[in-house]
Length: 577
Image 1 (tube, rainbow, N blue to C red):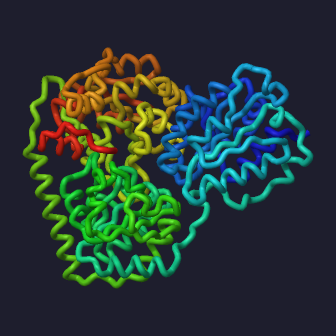
Image 2: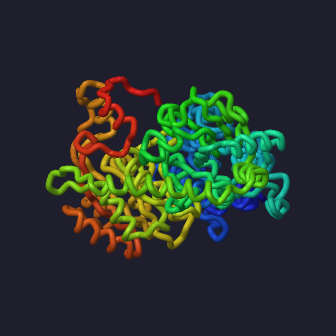
Image 3: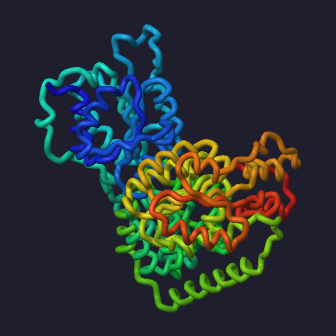
């Protein structure tokens, strides 16, 4: 007889799910029993920590535009998993969360691992339901998938008590065959903006002397890159991005400005946006980091703002008076393009020339900047360049918050064919990149993934190196080690009078840790050694590891404009984030 677990697995397959990241527990036995018998239809990827399963599913969604799925058992499993969903929730990444729960007959009797999961997930999911009967499972799966992939995307949680999974179903799993109404492709629906709002925005943009587009992760999730480039070329409008939007346009394109805002921006990108008289935000929160404290563009300045956003409540929220275009990014961009006149050749040539000149000045200044480094300490800029040379621009890149973020954002030129550079900017969780690189590798079998992490993030995620080895994944881990919690230490340096506290833990040896997990690795003592190791790693079949010492931020300032400004004007007042 068909039970609830069989209905669940069949419903997942029917909705296009073929991969689940997770970790088993007492309450998930029935679910795992079915998964173990259906491995030809749905793959289970065993993580070493439930939080990491959430990060894997998150990155899987970002890089494939298919719904990532993660699961955990009751109690601590669900609690751990919740902490892996906050980044996806803040970044509007659709993830289907499946958790099992105690038998309903034991609830309220203080059983081990009892927790109110609906309350637990309230802060990090947009939808959550607990199944009350076996037969409602298929409908709940379809409802969850639709909720995750429509409107403002985000994580959703389906909670399944043990007795619901084990209980008999009134109908068979076979009766549910056939395509689901939504499927797992992101986005699930593509609504257009109201025509009058699109007309208003197009007129505003056409009248601008110095327009700019600022695209975020929502443009990636919508698959809007191609349409965005067509709009930019049609109207000769330069395109900047948030860190999440990096690569939505090929960053070598004549109209590409690169990352803008308070972290990892090139100065000319911020300058162009700050001086623009019309700014079109596409799929970005336009928060303080993306806009350098709401100065790029100036929230109180004369620039006219258009905000393309899937969520009515978020559209224009940070820039009052914006023209809001609520709908799917790709669809709305097409609406704009078809309403705009083609830019004159002279306008196009002038903007191309201005951007080319600005890039040239910046490149020359970077070439002339030679920071003094201690022996054995490498320049992170040169590390990024060596990785780009060895792996190529088309490789998948996943990075942790902290040291990798500004250098990668500023110095890695991404191609314009998808979310190929994944950096967590919703919450900036440490320990994200190692498991997220596994999610990316699972989503793109056989393709090389480059993971930039740090010694302190490794301390939080090292167990997943075993996962990469077990699955023989072609992931190269580059550990940038400055022997401190350098980001927090820099904040203490600038805004707490240099009084350092709890930011200098003991050293780690990533190479030895890697060997313990089955990864061959080496430490690079010179830039030449690093370049050689990068080339070897790019050709390796499975996981590989490079360890490099890099300077603390108090020694060599990274491309973080808020810090650069603080040092330039001597301000000890910490900006609002």
